[in-house]
Each structure stands twice: as structure tokens, then as C-alpha cells.
Amino acid sequence: MRYVLDNSVLMAAYFPDEVNKPHALELLRAFSEGEVHLLAPHLLLAEAHHAVLKAVRGKRVTLEQGRAIVAALLDLGIPLSTVHDGVFELAFQYGCSGYDATYLRLAQHEGIPLLTADQRLVYQMRRGEIQVIELNRWKQG
Image (cartoon, rainbow, N blue to C red; front, side):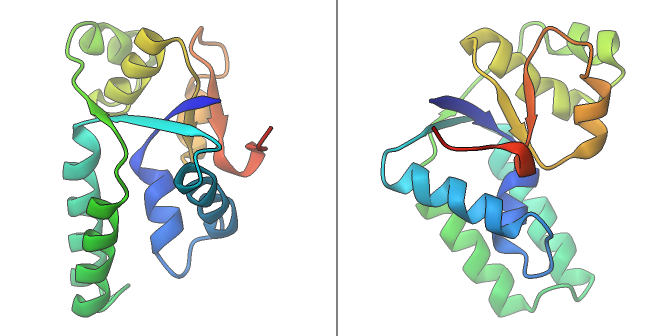
């Protein structure tokens, strides 16, 4: 199965206090073993760097942990894609951020679900035509 994943999924895997950590780690394990295919927009890396930097500054993780998280993220090898067209319209239509709309647009363009740990986004998209799966509801196979 193929999925677009957003930054909330990656942060769930790497931050020690995340409730969805087991689900995120299982997804990344399945990805590393070729059992699932993941895709994300280029935005993912910028968002990941920002989230890790914010976590270090907020003392959620140490500087050393932050560096290790960034290195691990860069080593994952998740294919990155560029999408621009339609992002503004999706953000306007669903009342979400331009960042969230970028992930949604890629999922729409590829015809695959978006995986997220963001409950707010799941709620916003409950009546949308783009399938959004909350990470804790993801089941392999």
C-alpha cells in the first residue's frame, strides 16, 4: 500500500513522549522493509527541521537528541515530491493551513491516502474527498 505521510507521523516516531510512537515506529519499520511505500512533499524536511529545533529550544529533547533525530530523518529515504497547483484552493476549501493542504494535494494527486497524527486535520477532512487516515487507526495489510 502507498501513503503520503505528514510531519506529525515522523515526529511521533522520534519524540520520546509521543502517544502514537508505537504506531509510527511500526509504519517506519514496514517502510524500511518494503512492506509499505511512503511519499511526502519536499515541505516535509523543512517542517521536520522546524519541529526538532522547536523541541530542542523548548527542552523537549536535548541538542544531541535533536541532531540525532535530524540525521535519522535524512537517512529514511522517503521519496519527496513537489506539488504547488491546487494547494491554495484546498486550503481555502477545507479551512486548513497551506502546509496541511500541501500534503493533502499530494495525496489527491497520487490518489492515495494521507497518514497523519494530527487529529485536527482528520476532523477537518472528515467530509472531504481526500482520504485521511489517523496514524493510530493505520493497520498494515
